[in-house]
Image (cartoon, rainbow, N blue to C red; front, side, top):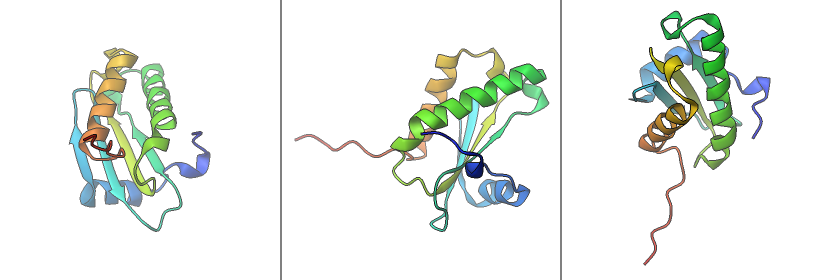
Length: 121
């Protein structure tokens, strides 16, 4: 799944709406927030990396890593018509990609974003 430019959250009001009315789960390196919206055509993503996360090149690297995670795992979401905001926590720039991936996937599962595997009898 490729993330086109039109799938980015660009309005401050959308970020605020996800924060106030959506669900959020915090991990060690990321905070993942989501809000289902049936009016959307596809997944809308946003990434927040503040100056507390590190210098500019570290923040850009974090955004690239988060974008890659959404590209690879976004197709597995149960309902792609939602807003998804990934917020990097301080210390995320010191984490390896595998640690970021594990934390991001853990929070996504806690939010119920993935299809539930069918129970085998």
